Image (cartoon, rainbow, N blue to C red; front, side, top):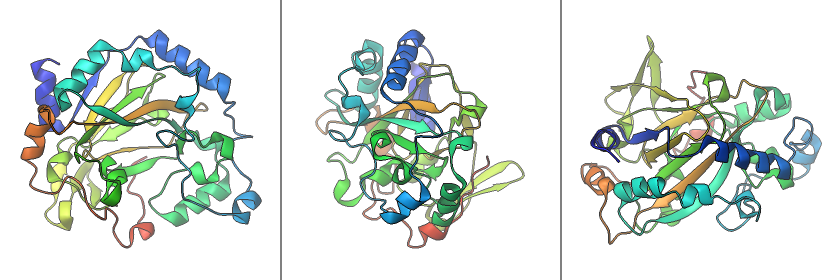
Length: 301
């Protein structure tokens, strides 16, 4: 990790690498995913009648050791987890003896695949764009989404779910080329310095500028960065960095790898220097606003 990338992670809360992984390995891994799962418009979703017969939104996503496609014996990720350059970057950020809390496949589902009744349900739910409750059970071993508004990954590790160190990063890998129409990740650099904030976040757009109101107080002008890249592009970001994704406008899904990596309390890394300067909490006991389901998305897609 060179000095420029170190400074970028400290200041902006993320770093991007374009050459850590072999593009061919990513494409081969993607082929294995499709061999296991026949993702298509016809078979992916429950019918509206099936969903309404037993509507449930709990425990529909992959876990570390349960209902996770990455547990399949044919889906080896040694080309990622035994990659010396990747491990060096993680060690630089978190320190040695870090641990992986969760690895999972995330899939952006093409807009044209999603039934109208599901889109209507999602609009009534407000800020939630997780499609897994509407999937047939055999497809719930990946996390499927239909866009996602700005959020912090710390939202999934609040209260009793908080990690021991309360400090982690996310490694995110594109397994295929991702352009503007493939629902790339959007980030707000420097947003992590304001600490953990309740969801949904106060973000407003005016004259092509973005204003963020941490703690619902003074507005801060931020820049938005669109993370496009070729297959094999690797991103690392702080758990408090605000990020979102939009809707897949291409006829094929966007399949990526998300890895949550926790630091070891006994070892120091770059992230300790960052966290020491954050005056707010790193984790909230309750990360949701009481009226969050009634909020509408501020997505610019």
